Amino acid sequence: MSVWEYIIGAVLIVFSLVIIAIVLLQEGRQANLGAIAGAADSFMEKGKARTLDAALAKWTKYIAFSFFVLVFVAMLLTKFL
Image (cartoon, rainbow, N blue to C red):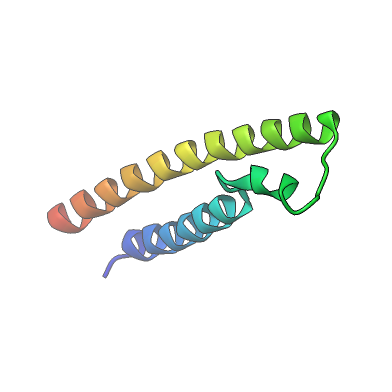
């Protein structure tokens, strides 16, 4: 194995861990069920959560796209080197 394969492998591991962390930080789609249990959120807290969730969703897309491009580059690198 070449040095580039080790480097790309390490970067892929880091990207996969970052993707997992970002997805786990996102709020679930059924987050509004807290009102049933009596948890009251203020209007400002809901807006803050929405913007943070939107930013995390955007970063998930960017990192996932970068991850798949890097996988494709690694595949080409191992095939032709």
